[in-house]
Length: 341
Ligand code: NCD
Image 1 (cartoon, protein in one colour):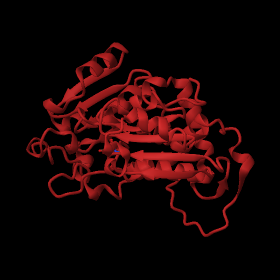
Image 2: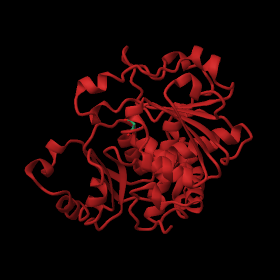
Image 3: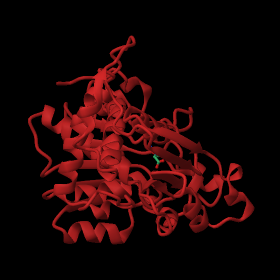
């Protein structure tokens, strides 16, 4: 695909070649994200970071990624703090904001909203989650993490076996990741969800037609054996028609160290897009896994910065100039980054 000036709205835009390009640029970003060097390649550029739904890591990591390339970030975090609360359309907001910024990142609770917004934007728009639909940058950082984890186990990306657990109906991270993984050879998807919260039939059919194996499970234990990855998700309570409905599923699947030891292969990677719900009634991913070296959740969040830096660099056409503007950091930096290499 052509990156320069493009919107990033859906994982459908990518093929294996474009993913490889993103990952190569992401690898190049490591010294900057790890605070060994700084670059000012985007000095003067402005990002509008528009988050109309709760977010910690996606919003902050997009902002930090832009800052780490030397750019400035403007942020709006609530509908009620924006003119959308006065009845302005998304398309008008886009016409306005694209006059102020070089690139826009947007999260919004409605499926298709970010695409609608992008249709009238004169600058590239990156989808940071449009309701239950898609979360393409999360899927890219998940895939980047999977690639690294597999590499460290001497494995490639083809013939991957992955268990996806939880709310597969409303989970946009899962929707995007399932589609992205389908670009690789013969994936085995083990979908673990209550019948009402399964992955859309249409997606399952598409995966099967593309030659992948999909099996459905209602018990967690029977789905997490013989897989390379367990990808756990939170019940997307905010997307349910009412709280009582969401309460039915809280705490239904809980992965902890004892269950992992009993049912998973010894090197199974544990992932979660985060946030995990740590309230007593939920705990889909128990805190007692924290010492498990296969728990990759905080490697995922670190990798998010690399992948988002890469997307900015590609879309704004500076990927080949990043190192020209580099110099060493001048301040004390703690070694905050998990290294496995
Ligand atoms: C996910 C999201 O917002 O879809 N979070 C994230 O961006 N890392 C998953 C979730 O909220 O459960």
